[in-house]
Image 1 (cartoon, rainbow, N blue to C red):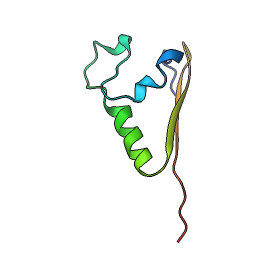
Image 2 (cartoon, rainbow, N blue to C red):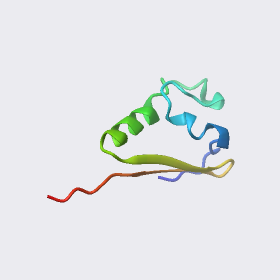
Image 3 (cartoon, helix red, strand yellow):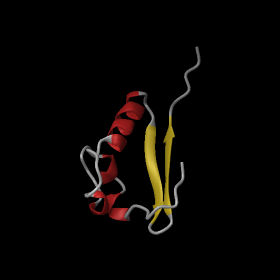
Length: 71
């Protein structure tokens, strides 16, 4: 998923996956800051990875991988 929003500052890219972490610009928005933390927990529970590529002022792209199991 790619957006055209304000992007995520480099120093916060790892923090956005922590529970209750919210960027300062989002502090006035409703929510608990759990969405990306829950995504990360679910993906890691399935032995996957999640990460973000972001350019300030140009937007962000979130990616994840999940392993493929063959029976």
